[in-house]
Length: 281
Image 1 (cartoon, rainbow, N blue to C red):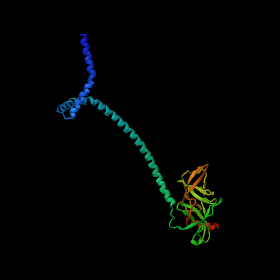
Image 2: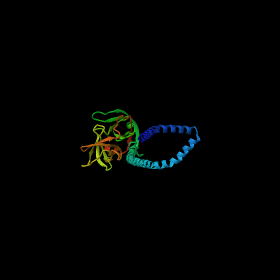
Image 3: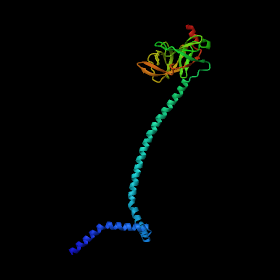
Image 4: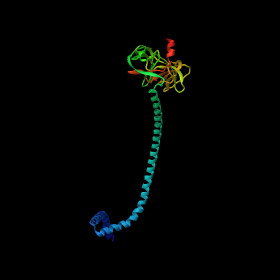
């Protein structure tokens, strides 16, 4: 009995060892028969599909639900991250939009200031700069228009960027204009929105400085500097520069035009300075 039982166990063990090979051979034969269109093999295949399809569907549903849940979590996480990113980007773009609008408004304002058009009541003419008398002590120009061309003392000189000088001497066919940067230049001005009263004083550098008329006056970088019209030499409201440096109570002004590298100027007569100038002659 023991020997027969032993032989059965050995045969059974050998069968299970050969079972994968036999199963593979049968599967290959089944595949070949299916591909050749064998009716028996096709019916077996269809029956297997009908039999196993509910079982596969039932077993695969938990896996499908798990995968769907994982995908939903991933999508929610991605959506949340994308919303956070879009919110930050939107805030960033809003800040830039606000800055762009502000700069655009300032640009339009400066365009109006720099492309100054004299009032209709003024008289103006264009002259060529024929000599630059700039030195260590003066900053003036000789222009090719004088008394014969209608130039009078006190006319203001403009470029396309703004006013930068004043006629101080007139000859028959030439005139001398003194720049705002000349150390003899003194211009009454208002500074900033509060119209702080000051005198713009040239010191022969490209950036004249402000001397305030009242104590404890303060200005900030970026404040616009315009003529105030005091004493009648300059009309009020001519934009001539902006404050670009404030240190130790001294404010320096960046002029819209300092008169360098110019070939032509526009001389404008506002008919304001002649009575005062004649009285001083």
